[in-house]
Length: 305
Image (cartoon, one colour):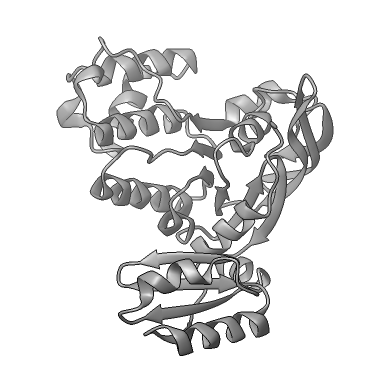
């Protein structure tokens, strides 16, 4: 049984289709990345999957429960961490977690709270007011509240936005431990390094799912060619490349330039042409997940326009 297995999900608000025929599956124990630009429908899709929203069309199962009939059962088995951490800032970490324990009818509540504090390294800060915590500690407390009832599926909506790199790495260490213990994780993110930590990724753009697979599979299937351009003439070449045959992307990376396109032959000719007129040299590079991400964005139409 798959942790998530949905087909043709549709969610509309008035005449706007926010989620448009989305089909995807996530294996049990898998860390799945959910990628896409702002406003692409990631949050709405996650809320449908965790039983907070009812789809207008489509079907599927989450943890073996039917999306249409068993929303309450899904909610009890899922931990959902929203983009904005939800807690009472004038209560301590311990008091916030005690409140959550009572919501889930966890008995004995004190044991669940103490165990969760210990598991997330929060015991020494248990009396600290939530409002006084840094971004990284707020994130850790929010995760604690989401996993205290021991869900089988954890849905994380851009959980590391606004926290420093050290806190991000520590957070991902926690996620990997949870997955190693059998928990399934679906995490939406804009960070390419985080996407590369996932077993599989799913890319959604303006309501439509465009790609699913491992990072290597998604990069391979995008069929992009990337040239790395260097030399004193790089800055002038960056402007000259725009609009040339076969050139879909031109992006500075430090002292180098990444020139990306779908038509390898035309792209090679354009690189060779500018190599003769500008003081640059070029070599074939490895297409990155970020290159693919930008290519998907460029080829998508905003469904809210």
